[in-house]
Length: 115
Image 1 (cartoon, rainbow, N blue to C red):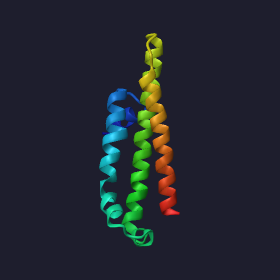
Image 2 (image 1 turned 180 degrees about the vertical axis):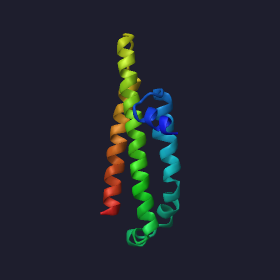
Image 3 (image 1 turned 135 degrees about the vertical axis):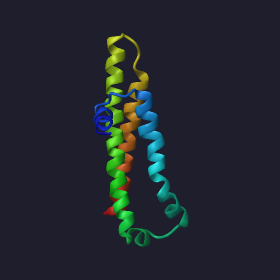
């Protein structure tokens, strides 16, 4: 498990796996517990009063940032490999843009909700 985490962090997995699993599938799974809270239409004060919510929100934020950094490094490796092969690296660049924008959006959302 430790080696898997290190390999993921360093971007040693393919961009396809890192992006689709680490930036699409797992963030969706992490967000599932929040869906009933949003659908219930409860006020922020009610939601924020639960310690469990705050702890889970902070944990999920750091987990997502870990996933994004690993996918970001994978995209950088993808671009480097494609450049070495003198091939186009458009998918790598698109992934970088998506990861950065999604990371910013999540950071802003978390800070607005917690502070």
